[in-house]
Image (cartoon, rainbow, N blue to C red; front, side, top):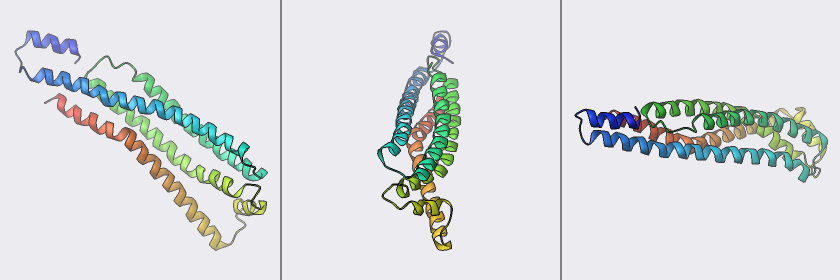
Length: 207
């Protein structure tokens, strides 16, 4: 139901004087979280593109051995492809939700549904990226020319003791999990709070 239909019913039907203004107010308020989500998403798209560009510039600033540099570029290339996948999804979401002139309950429901689907793609990309980013980090840490080249070569080829292999594996998993937790927490902080506000408002449309 849009504003024109509400106004028409107000003029043609006997209704509670406080009920309709309350619904109109809720529809206007519902725009605020929607616009905040869109603003955060636009900012994140720009930030992610800048971060990707920075990651690819780093090897040109830091002197690295050939093998770790190659491994770094490969892992970052795959991570970038995954990142661009959800950035395209975000861009599509922003375009689809750009017209908010139909201020209705259906509009809010559709927005929440599409936002949740977009965030699922986002979280899937995070899981994939969190498995590759530690490899890029290891390449930067052990791949500089200041570090003996055989250290990274032995590590990447698993020419290490069983104890060292267990420690490296544990560290790899720990870093991947931390990256995932931090990114998901950041996502929930940016978008989750607004989803809860919109879902709360949905219940007030029928009050």
